[in-house]
Image 1 (cartoon, one colour):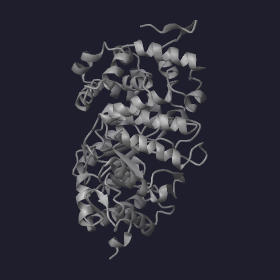
Image 2 (cartoon, rainbow, N blue to C red; image 1 turned 60 degrees about the vertical axis):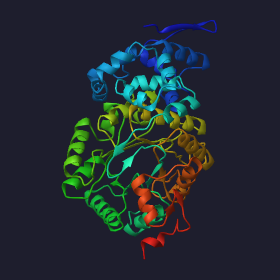
Image 3 (cartoon, rainbow, N blue to C red; image 1 turned 30 degrees about the horizontal axis):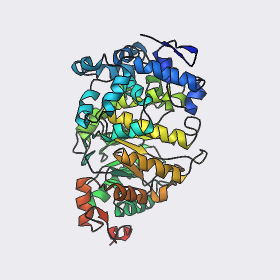
Length: 454
């Protein structure tokens, strides 16, 4: 395994695969903060050159966190399909990239090969791609999952209705639910980020959301994004749960900082299948975001793109219905400006798709970042072209509880119209029955929330 090269009349030597992966990364403020980024463009290009010549077997043998110290590494490695892996292990990363982008390589080809990959392989391919490469690669892949409805099919763009409220007011939450549904938003999930993470409050919100969708026969899923341990307790008390949610990290230490372990995830997955009210079999919902491991000092000296790919490797183990990267939420310490957020959003979406996940993106930013609403709309447009599975839908794109900006109900409608995409089939049929949509487009009744109060 060669870790040295000569470029521009200068010799470059890297100590291990982890350093090559880190320094081959596009500029990210998080990598700079961690002290692992390339010092200049020449070193970055040298690292990319070496990475392009490494084999997929080299990457499997050199995970960024050793198997003996990290349960995420062990899960990713144990989930590899060995026969498929042995057909590709001698490919260089450059050959792998070319295979993904080749015109004759289909989405089914990529879905099959994904079962033989580790997360380091997925991240390595992303590091050798331009933004357009990431869009093309992701656009080929459609990963289906079923909870109460089926997500990920061709020609469909789903949305999460996010009816957050600064006091968890039932009236306020349901007002947002009515408005969002009236715009054809909410087919992926109606997902509430609660202010109050207690079991009674979680049960109350779940019961109110469940009662609403049962009353109006809305074909969707509900979720209250409390901590996973809170949701498990609520479920054990008989709460109406469809999806179980948790933020996850790409290392065991990062998940410990989130207050979870694979044991917790195993428990949630088992009880969700046994006692949850979803049709299934896909009943887990995960959120991620580049930089979370660094923020908890759990990165082991690895770069944030590779660690993000490892989140997807962990998520795959639990066959989720939804996964999304909250790409601009964590702040400028990790993704400094629009350019970095755009790159990260395209990387994350591609890596999630290549890992086999029904991958969505919360195209968003916080007020202390060098970004604005036009930037996020640009990113959402690129992601829609890349075949993004779902986006967030928030009143006016401004979350009044989490205090960040992302995609609105109107943005989801615009992206569907622009790319000739439609909601999930079951939801579209319901929206037509409510006269909100016709032939895949919103009608004059769209946006009139009073249809749910008459």
